Image (cartoon, rainbow, N blue to C red):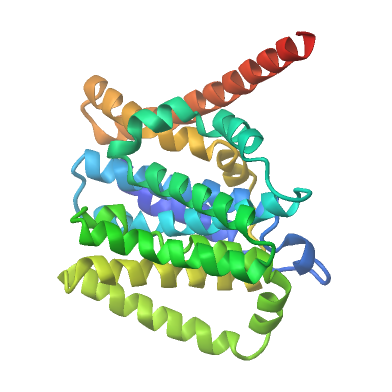
Length: 318
């Protein structure tokens, strides 16, 4: 009962409040897909991921399973945001990217040793590293945004279908068709937002909703599960972006959580399993897991940044 209250009551109400704000006059250009908005969105998405794995690991049944089983689509949104921020990072560079410096900088945030050791078993980490390398190649080879986007699009399409042909489980590739969409959104943000402000918005939104409903039904019936999940994840991502065209996402809580998304992703399943050994009731496992996951995420984040600062100071002295 307590788990249902939090998962089906408290979190959805916080979510509705976060999406209840409209843009003020002249605010859209500054706020739409800004760092504040995308970080808030990441905070919401990682909570969905947390509940998705909590429901699976605790064998929860009933409505909460039905709701969070489909939280898998949030990974597609993470890839969209990653594509957007990756293109944003490249836009700030002068000339060709220095891949050595870029990967050293990334390693602090991505904790490269952890990533390497988990690659064989982690679909998300493997895919995100592939897309980073793909983007590095695109921005190193081409000077035109169109050519870069075409190259990233091709790689984004080839990657999941190659995994399918190789016989990987559907969870390795069924929600990763959106990285190139994030890159495109950054490159052509003004054109895309101007286009969607027209009446076409009211065509795309219902079409996307219908495709999502159909793909959810097909996924439930497993006809075919992997392709229907690809469609569902992609169309639901489009719907969220369309919502952000009209609603200004705001939440201090989700913004705070969004700052530690990566650390929460890396630690939450371990902590849930640990709490299962200590508590027998799901509600106690849930509350303790949420608190300890966020606390450990903050500690890991601050510790890594502190270590980075110490090492950089020593290098400067030498």
